[in-house]
Amino acid sequence: MAEILQVSNVTKIYEKQYQAISGISFGINFGEFVAIMGASGSGKTTLLNMISTLDTASGGKIYVDGHEISKLSDDEAANFRKTKLGFVFQNYRLLKSLTVRQNIAVPMSLLGKDDQEIDQKIDKLAEYFRLSNQLEKYPVTLSGGQKQRVAIIRAIIKNPALLLADEPTGALDSKAAKLIMEYLAKVNQKFHTSILMVTHDSLAASYANKVIFLKDGKIVDQIVKKDSNNTFQQELARKLAEVEA
Ligand SMILES: Nc1ncnc2c1ncn2[C@@H]1O[C@H](COP(=O)(O)OP(=O)(O)OP(=O)(O)O)[C@@H](O)[C@H]1O
Image (cartoon, rainbow, N blue to C red; front, side):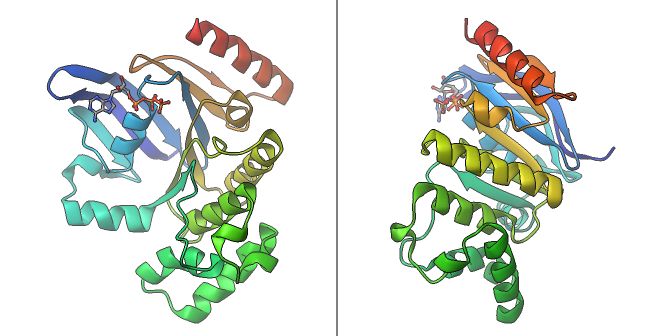
């Protein structure tokens, strides 16, 4: 199966002395949903920043959709983020001065798509995400869960090769978090979007097909979902207790 992400023996050393990531290797197949879990300081954000081309690795190689990202110039990296990657953040990062519709349109406008095509896509996705009534409102009037649904639509509207989600449930109560994870799982299953999600939250991680555990910049374990969700959640809780011990 084709790999959408390949991380090969990657290290990150800050200020020539502190090794935040130590020789990490893993991959994501096309259409897979992978979660990375680890305690604060384990290197999750560092890893995500390197994969998203916002930071450079000190060693090793990262391939996204067949491109070795360290070889990209700054301009190429910016274009690469614009065309290949979708981002969902803990704090939504919606633009306050734009309506929901205008927020969602930004990545498509940057790609030069025509207004009619953009509007049609937005209407369809908004219906799927039950946000049709919110499109002409400003983000400040929306709940946290609604804002995150807007952020997900904005991230997937251009069909990215890889969706990167950084603590997508971190600012939500448990009910809203569950709904957001159900939507992310649907995005993965219905649109076959490959997802890499970083999270502290074991409920959120239980929606992934595979969970990788990070500790002190190293992969210390991983589990793969087989048939039963219940068994996966129990295994997840057990591994998490071991890793955080
Ligand atoms: N710019 C930097 N300069 C020096 N050290 C850094 C820098 N950024 C991160 N670190 C260190 O690298 C390690 C990993 O940090 P990172 O932010 O990747 O962890 P994390 O798992 O994402 O944590 P959290 O869950 O709290 O966000 C930490 O010890 C952190 O202090």
